[in-house]
Structures are given as structure tokens and as C-alpha cells.
Image 1 (cartoon, rainbow, N blue to C red):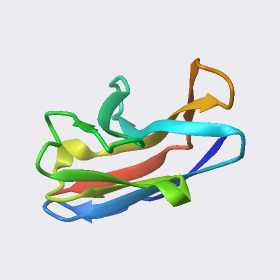
Image 2 (cartoon, helix red, strand yellow):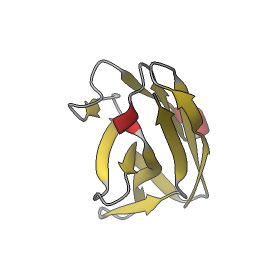
Image 3 (cartoon, one colour):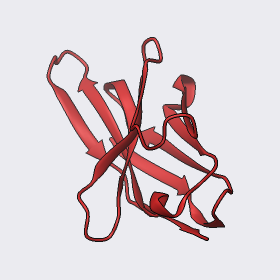
Length: 121
């Protein structure tokens, strides 16, 4: 399983950005995908996740109401629309996928390369 992330960049506070992440490979089922972020000096934290069966979402309190995560099952992709961005949203954003191999019940986690998001006021 490989994850390819795109999007990110620099924006002024109050602006918007969109991140995309697509999974490639074969022989697996995606249970969920999501985004995590890490600011300098901080631990990696959850931003948002979505399940691929019924689309259940989970957001960090800090982004609730500003960010929207949605999936494109046929593309094995997930996107994160980030609105009303704040300085504290700055960090490296990592895509994550929770998958199961065909015939296996254990879940595996894969990470994409990070993409930088910089918000300046």
C-alpha cells in the first residue's frame, strides 16, 4: 500500500487549502483514512478521519466546524477541505490509511509522506 499526498502550501489566516491523498496497490480493503499533523516541537495529532464503509467522521475539537474530510471510494482517496485556517493549523500533515489484507482480519496502518501547511497572519 502506498499513499500519495498532495496539496498544502502557504496561506494567510482565514484562507483555505485542500489536501488530497490516494492509496495505490492491490489486495487490500480500506477501512478508514485520515489526516494527522505535527507542529514543530509537538507530537503528531489526529486532525480528521473517515471510515470507508458508511463514512463516519471524527474530527479534532480544534478543527471541528472548519475542516471537512470526505472520501472517494472508487479512487481509494480522501480529501481534507480546510477553511478558516489559523496560525495554529501550521504543521506537517500526514495521510494515514487503515487497511486489511484480503483474507486477513488484522488491521495495518500506512503513512504517506508529509505535506507542509503554513498559515501566517
